[in-house]
Image (cartoon, rainbow, N blue to C red; front, top):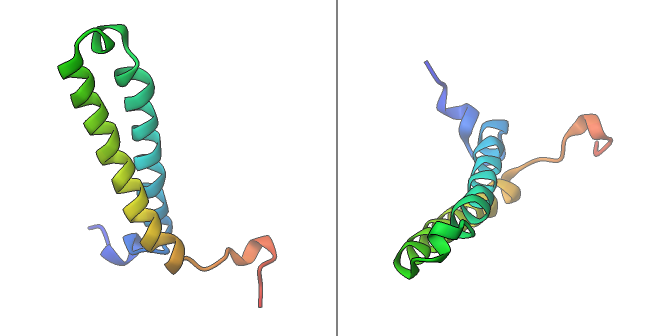
Length: 80
């Protein structure tokens, strides 16, 4: 069973969700929003753009909580 504590803001699990939101946003922009079939149809482009915007908003929301909760990695020399 998955332990919810592994996915709270500041955890590696939350960082993984942040990264996935970024990757999926980038893929939607690159692969859908800029695809010639999508570009040719304004309604489709608007939908692809809305999907990209939503993923970007998700990325920002996760980042806002995750990055303020995250502790600097001790193994990188950020010890106090």
